[in-house]
Figure 1 (cartoon, rainbow, N blue to C red):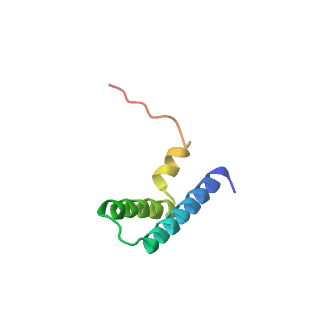
Figure 2: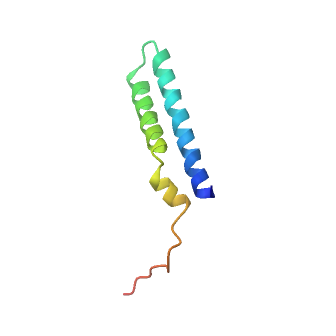
Figure 3: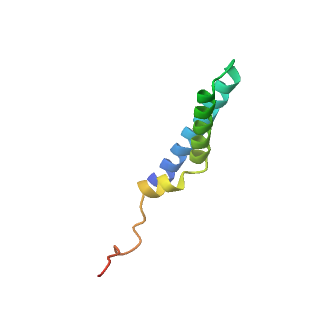
Length: 74
């Protein structure tokens, strides 16, 4: 495994742990306020994004080195 694949695996594991955390917090909540529900939904969305591989974050961390840099001419 190269470093890009390890980073992608790390992101997926963090996303899975985040989803498990949110589900546990929802299950143990007695009467959550609207703020806490909205915050947990946001955390859940972030966790799902990370589990799916976070393609934008992965592209940012490991940009493609395929060819020449593009330049614009005026």
